[in-house]
Image (cartoon, rainbow, N blue to C red; front, side, top):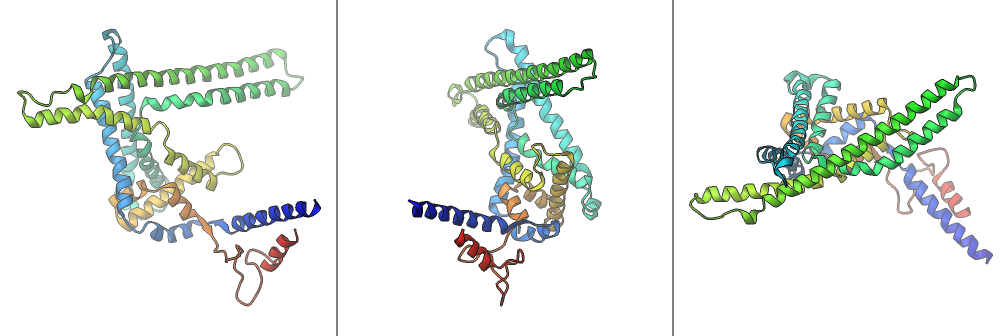
Length: 360
């Protein structure tokens, strides 16, 4: 019936109106407003923030301990494969220590006493990037290469479509030999990308096989609790036997870090435009924003506590810092100024906006 269709349309329009009211009530704060709201959101080193920052450091130490243990006692199902396993382990350990040196190199300029007096610059941007790199490094392993197989087919298909589009859009006066060479170069890039991704994926699978061998070989059930050795040495042996289990569990959780994905999504929503890929200027804006946050936290709470508090920031903290929302009244509309019915967002009154929703 006609009246049922009208009632359904009215419900849809009212739902859209409420969604529009809530979306219109949100805005992004300026940098000065973000710094003003930094103390209410991060008043000090609370128990939860201390647990998050110390958890990152403990997982970092555990990851390095497991990597060094694998170098000292490499496991392989056959003696012939021992050299290959050692090379795989050395590559992972080398990456961990190179990244640690890079992080310390970036943190060195910001650790001086004169750095706190400097405004936001490349020094604090690099320091913020170094502190943020500790989170993925705390659970890094070659197991993180395994999920890259998911993007192989989509990226390869987009590259093929781009190569075909360039072939079709080439100018008619372009020599055929030049067009063929460009088309062949595009296909070579696709082939190189596919080869690299498949090689990295194979390294991830091989690393998984090696780590499972290490966990099976270091089973705590095979360790002697008693014997002629002292009790403290037997207890230490048992603890070392549990180290591969804990390290493997830590690296498994680092394959896909959900909190890092949420934080990247929030920062992309705030700083990126409508383009699919984030531009270089937008990346620099993100680094500058993080550098300002780290500098302010270090100025207000000290270098050590400020760095720990920055390390404990989550995607929810970023959203609360940047996204501001005007308060809505009980009817779901924005409050008007006292003595007037004018909506603070524009020239139309809030009553007119509600009337438009009812008439629709």
